[in-house]
Length: 63
Image 1: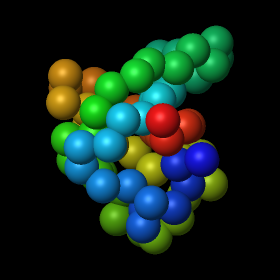
Image 2: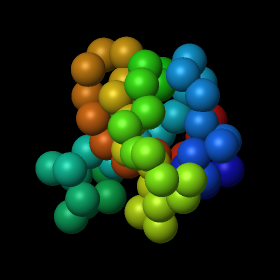
Image 3: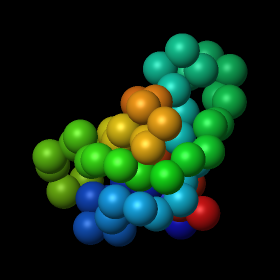
Image 4: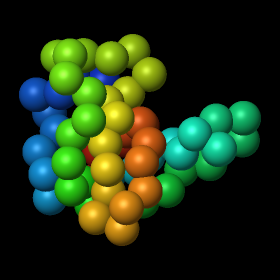
């Protein structure tokens, strides 16, 4: 599942995010959602979140 709809995202779910510094490479980083940062119901590049380990990025996959 893609991470473009805010309704699909809940704190505590496992996701794969793309960090800002990895945009060129497309490398994904896994983690668990701590907080949702995007306020709009959808975002074409993925909903922005903070993971429990403190990393910030846009969701590319919901695991």
